Image (cartoon, rainbow, N blue to C red; front, side):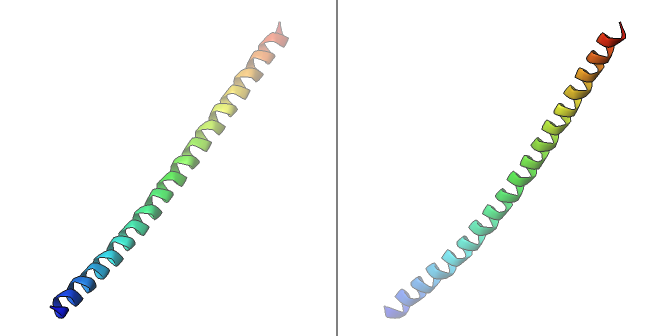
Length: 66
């Protein structure tokens, strides 16, 4: 009976360590994906600001040409 209990405890500990490792790797992957999405969003925002500035510059140039 004690051996069965020992096997059950060791199995649970081994399974728990495996789950913890998977959870840690999953969290790391999630963090990397979030960082990539944040970077892409920042680049898109920068592009939008640049486009808006160019458009505003064009409008000012057109207005001063007349």
